[in-house]
Image 1 (cartoon, rainbow, N blue to C red):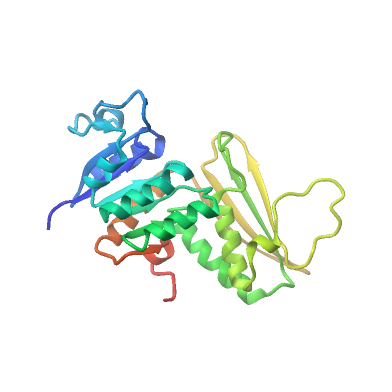
Image 2 (cartoon, one colour; image 1 turned 135 degrees about the vertical axis):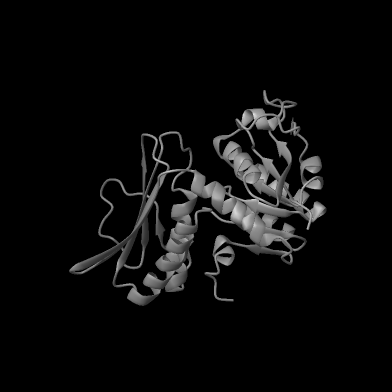
Length: 271
């Protein structure tokens, strides 16, 4: 079987560089193309030198159409607007699209759903296998305990993170809401300040902390009368996200068109 051609967009970022190295270290995979936004200082230079892997003969480009045309799969950790546009290119090229971008609007999510009619897309707010197990556990615990247990989700990230709550925290909220068969948008409480009154039964609360170089900590708290259950995941390196993204790309090879999640990749969805 020919090498699996994998392209990386956002290749100059920390995650992009990790992904380049991960592809190079994986037997049967070939780095086919790399891309950055137009005007970036690394355009035209060798991506291997950027990632500390030596010369690879793969130049950093800024043409998304060319990137997808040269690749069997593209791993995309960029921005919501870029990932939504890239989904269209993936559909045109029939290339697998692995999306680790968070913060997509409902319209941008619709773009992914539309593109997934033509190619396999794996989209997850967090590519870590451990976090996706936490999603599954959160749904099961929420279903088992019922609304007499209050749910609070606490997340902490590094000081440079620009969105809150994190995409992972929102994913955990959705998992909890699915377990209770409710719409998260109708029960979410994203911040409290001042005289807020007593906590409303059935709501799902979010708290966001920022500081230092924290990669990502997430805790789901189920607080009842006289007892409390806490499910926690702490990431100490971003490498787990690169590992998970490549695992998703390999899993999606040859899959029929559709919008998949890491829970599909890990066999945690009951279909």
